[in-house]
Image 1 (tube, rainbow over the protein chains, first blue to last red):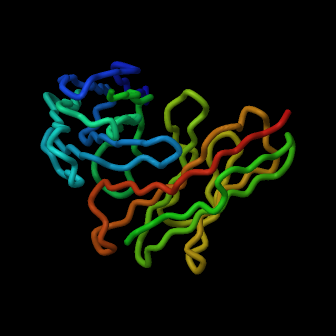
Image 2: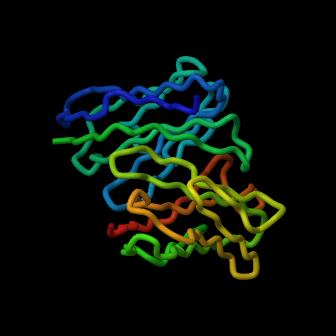
Length: 114
Length: 118
């Protein structure tokens, strides 16, 4: 099973709301990722977790707060977002961080900030 | 800065035509190369990958890619496309720390949209 699941599929939120995106994998992978994909653009890395510890934060604003409660789950907490944060948010996982590891992607959460 | 270039923004082909999508990267050292596909409404799926060895790699659904180190290229090919190949194709690179790459940092090209006419 090479499935990464994400909920919700769609999310509309106001700039004062607090919401969370969820990601889950049951492949035993120890690395998990959040990417942001704007329309007609490639995915851009936001965060990397390795063994439930934050490994990389690609200078993401603090209104995005990742959390890795356990090795199968990855959350992205959203607070006080801006309209320009509207995008497709992708979760991915891999066995580890080695350069040869394949990343498996979820279907994404399409976020609209009003 | 590290970058991946995909030269074609949108390619339109008829069924049974041959396909070649270009991908060039800017690193000089060891690289790991991937092609992902995103079918309409679906998630990114791995088509194929290259780490070392035979520079001609075969992937799923009849796709293949050739790594040419001297040209910094990793072009995707398929001899005969089908309507079901209509999708967005992304080339991606992961480099090691010696190239300034962060661990796990997969850098994508801008993607090529392929439309196959039945």
